Image (tube, rainbow, N blue to C red):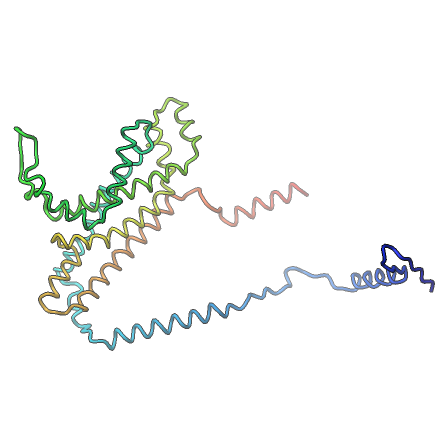
Length: 323
């Protein structure tokens, strides 16, 4: 065997070593069995941390359930008042207040969002001031202001035509709808404006190019497309409004928390009646969450990932064209 070595850039290279390495590599490639991707076994990583967290969470839930079960709670009182007429009346008033306040909030929010994006400086500044004021003051404060509006305006109406006493008009229901609805409109305005801004400007330009006004293009072209972005936060705001209606109990509106308070003031079963209120809040929120899911899915048609079968068909078609 002849070994030829040379010095190339301070590295000693031997042809015999190179040939031996190439022969060894060729023999390994020839003798190694072919690997089939389908025969390989997928080994998933062991998520030990996830299992530990799950175990700790279950233990904490069991301890919490044990504390409630062994606590001084008369569960018979809970079952007795869960479907009591006074409680059910409060639940109904909560649902009515939620939808009325959200209707007012959505109408004002859409109007304020369109005004905010208007070319008219007066309308734009009015919308900015509306959002600034009603988003910057607490909801409870606004409820109290509306409920005590008679201290500022004793009568309402048109001078010389008709007038009514403010205390007769500003009932707890009206004050709650105005207080919660107008405040909600300030938040909804920003949500709607964000949804409109998410749509490409080309949609507005295309609508205006066929003779549509900016307002008509916004209502007919841009706003329907923006619903995909607007619906999720509005759904969350609606769920939040269910719980926000509890503030109306301060101005004597008989929603579910007020109804519960009236009962436990009489029988002194505070925890039991609060558990009843909690159960009903969870039921209402769960139903609204399911409705929100289906509404979001309706407005999300045509967006997001396509079905896997369609993706696979496109991939196979491209592979066939490439071959």
